[in-house]
Figure 1 (cartoon, rainbow, N blue to C red):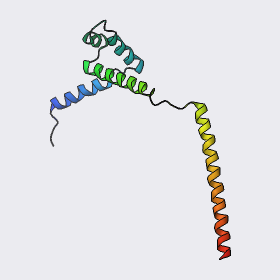
Figure 2 (cartoon, rainbow, N blue to C red):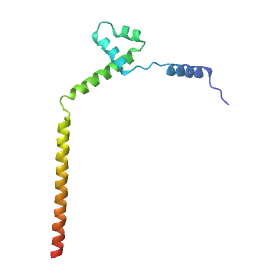
Figure 3 (cartoon, rainbow, N blue to C red):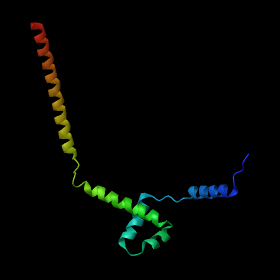
Figure 4 (tube, rainbow, N blue to C red):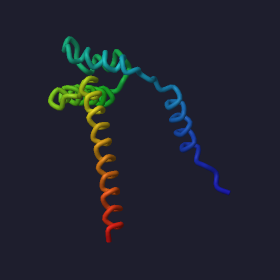
Length: 118
């Protein structure tokens, strides 16, 4: 039976402790930290030290923040429908469905009358 080297188990133990004691930031906290850097009053390194985060984590949040803003602003180009427009489209859709049902009924009647004549 092989025993696990003590170095490996020690590393796993430390990783488990770090994983369990990891700080979780709310989205509001992340936004405030990113906005603090955008203001440019202090350096990113100072902000990261102040909040106890690694710079790569900060840059990941910054990228996500900017991508979300870009995605939201691109919504101005592809405008979303208002509730009035949606209700109008639903009414039009219902009318079209009724028309299709009526045409199908008429088609069936004509088809049956033609088979009777034959």
